[in-house]
Length: 414
Image (cartoon, rainbow, N blue to C red):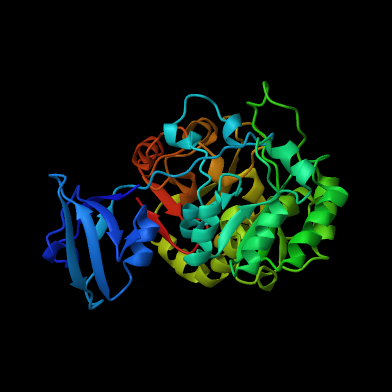
């Protein structure tokens, strides 16, 4: 459907031509405009014929030239994302408690957001016209949740009601020049073992950019759902061993911790293609710590209070290393507190899924201490999973909060 304008940037080309908020763009150069990507793609030409309806429902046309020194200036209304049509046996959203923010229950499965934000999609809700558009507009790379290339098992895992073959669709996209990052969520007894080996062989054969192997996440809210097992230490070791036989294949940090094996070195991760998937996050954090250690220590030396690093259990040992290095220069300046995730269940050990309630109940903060928290426990608006704003959390934690980004590339005291 046509794209409604949310606002126009002052002084932009669109403002000069009289376009206004609530105008509806029908087409650019005779190409239908249905979303923000269409606007970006077709609006990139030097000369534009824009057909639109104004607030009085009158259809108008304007012709303009872009000198590219000014922005076109059209800000569309927020994108309504396409949602998932599957009923995956391992869906994390289905395992969330019922009283959280509405946005946390959105099961997005939108190829446009995959391109822009790196969200993983399943492809099961794409029509032929979507594939044609992806190829025509060269929407690449895309991030695809594969899990298995066995079509019978794939349908059993994801419980969709359509005829669909994931490997056929991936092969079609690759043959048409679309680059792909892929992931396999390991559900023990389902898609591990020979099934995983076959999947890795298939994905390698079509030359995907990366293959991420991550363990299934299980919360304490699975009582009414099909029983599945978590990845244990022995399976984690096997996953690492098998992954080493395939190019561009990476196990998540959690798998290495479960296997009690060292995180691989920096050069193993190439360009860190699946960082947001928890793959290489610990290594990048440690590399950035090495680069930024002197700067960080010099800054905290000017602060009277001592520091308590708050972390999930997954990264605890690595923050112990960081605290020890700080204390070797500034004795007793830093300590580490691992927070158990009682909110979602203790099998959830990543820092990014901690919530304010667990932090506040478990931290033993003294009056002369400042809590140090990773930025990834907050959303873009500064709220935790249980809807506590970082400023409110700061107030409850001695009135100060030291926030480090999840890669230890930056930090701030608020």
